[in-house]
Image (cartoon, rainbow over all chains, first blue to last red; front, top):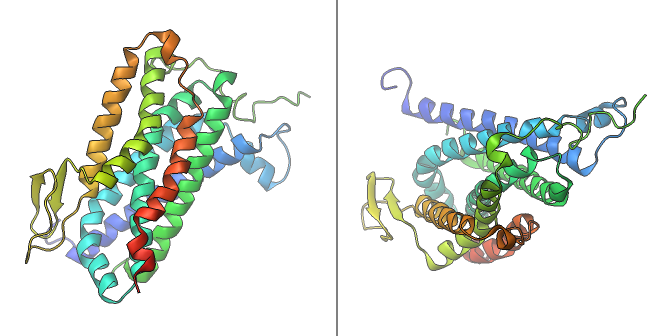
Length: 163
Length: 134
């Protein structure tokens, strides 16, 4: 990429890729969590009902792939965060912001380890034995994803895109 | 008109699962991996067992833990913790696959979502210096 874009633009583009992947993941997981928590019995209805009325099982592989891709891109840009974002945040006393980012990295890693069982439960969605576990792990992952997204968004506002 | 249309999560997936998902051995591996993952991650972080340490300012990668060196910027342990966690959780999953099915089928599936919830208070506690720093 040397010569095509500046270093700043290069990393900002990767941050954007991370964001786009995260938006896809958030949408898929939220649809799925709503479908599993409040299953729709009638297909028609308002926008909220239709939001819940998705073929949730079809999202499982996409959610796993998106979680891993978002995780990998986030891990890649993390090296720059550690030097060019975290150090200035520490120097300006934004300790809770740094703490929340560390919280985010732990939650993302824990979420990563849940994916094999999550995928298995969804690929066996016709088996009622897994209903409760599937519902539980999907809701946990959805809450995690919202947390990761909001913390990332706030951190980006503090010192992120193009800074 | 049927009210049990293919709109909810269960009804939407009447198709047969792929071969991997139909395997009871894979079920044992996946559930054990996911149950062990959050616990192993917390233990790895508590005892600080990164498989490697990365120094982003210099691009140096060393096995195990290495503190930040003067003049070389910060060290990064998170990558090492994750790889340690994945290896241990995978080893536990593979070990569980060797268990007789009458034992492996007794693994409580609810632990897959209970353990990550239980891990959160520990994670918050482990970050206490950031919350209490003036």
